[in-house]
Image 1: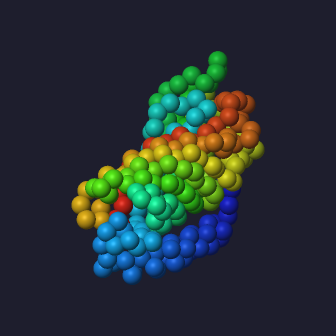
Image 2 (image 1 turned 45 degrees about the vertical axis):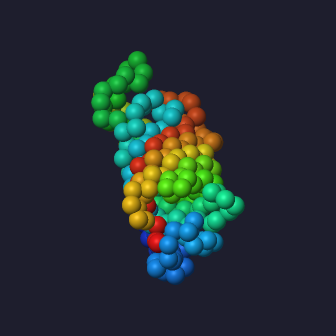
Image 3 (image 1 turned 60 degrees about the horizontal axis):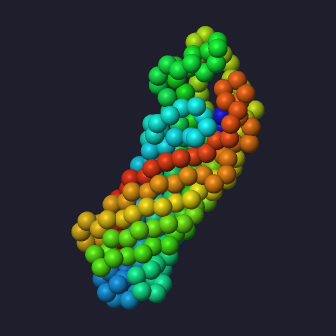
Length: 226
């Protein structure tokens, strides 16, 4: 199920790349500086790359089996004391995956199921630092769907009309996580996030009829310009 045409996807990709480049431009001035706690700079930032481990709550498939990319840029703004606000611009892949047999009703057995959801995501978080630069973060994120596919294989064969059940264009998540400082500007992050509202208004009645929510863990590396 392709919600957006190829032309739109390409244009959006270029726009996202341009936004990230603009986002990172002020960071060049930070390249020769120390960490923000030491030099009292108001803004500091870096780049992020990692992996989403996702599932969709309500699709009848258990397990964080869907692996996707989580890449982008981050900027921090100093607040008082150990506190800082942050904003990220990300390309984030979410969804669901099952490659095992499962009975989904009295007549159908599922052998494969996948949902691939590609988002442009903007988390806005509050962070609290310790003296070693480790920090915890919590807040909200807004995601805009830029493309999706959904597929299923059953025994016996059944034709599911997924085009009649599109995913919502927007996804709002609650976010919480922690960053561990490894060395210099390098950090590792573990994050959990969960949709606040259903990502699909109507679910295929043959398969499931409950609300669906993105549910995922994120493992990432961040390099802060220092």
